[in-house]
Length: 395
Image (cartoon, rainbow, N blue to C red):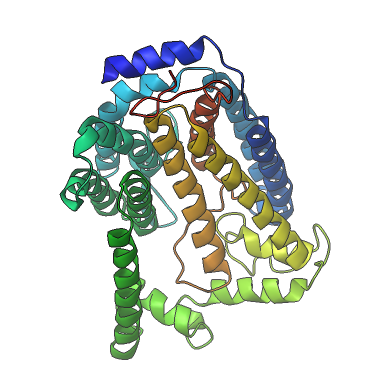
């Protein structure tokens, strides 16, 4: 099968007549917008803490510029080479996360999720790349056997194991949830049956609602901090001193922005009222300064980014490329939805950043890596005189 994929890749390489410049444009636009909002959001705090209002902006700008260039360069490499590397990336992600619990692990703001190996990064981001690459490899190797529900056990199990390692080793529940979501979406798209997955979604949603109701009635503010988050989510005003302060301030920012906002740079909540506003709460400052109009524009940009990824996945020359881009689509969609849902208090706080906009060098680096994979797949798209073999390869 691998030989067939190589032969297909060679045939496609003979004529590459497409490159998704629209995806490049929207990624650069989101990155530049993110840098503008990052400076607006972080300048006061950076000046107060470090005496340099450009600190956060400067670091993010350099990392973003380098990553955009690397993204364009890496996108010229044939993505089929990742097929052999899927298992290695999966094992490496697990090892890196395990190293967080060794002296190489770094604690930031009370959370031990970072690893220092010459550079400091979050290995949980590597786990997302592992899901994107390794699960399609598993599914393709199963071939025709990937039909019944039992066939889902192996890819679902791989995603569940990586999610469990993420939670145990880095105590990062939000990333563990995203990994489970990515796994479910990749398997759902690849599997020929739809109804069982829809039933799982419905049953899961009912269980979550019932569970939240039972927990909210039977626990108090002295429980674990994750259970406290549910209480804070349900009644942020009542538990403002136990964790509801940040979300309350974010809601004040959203409400005070109105339709068109206070103007760029005129946020009051970023002056310390919203803690670490440049991270996962940056959307609230966007809405305060640019209003509902600005928030809608941001969501439309993300919507267009997801549309381009959907287009590439739908027209990919083979199943491997299609499933990898599906995983990227799932990651971006889940992270955007979770971040905005937290800011508007639709779900409990999770600590998920807004892609391309929130501060974080690790996040930008691995997001650009995902975009490079998507662009590499887009380079193999052909629209004229194309026939596909059993695995979706162009012949």
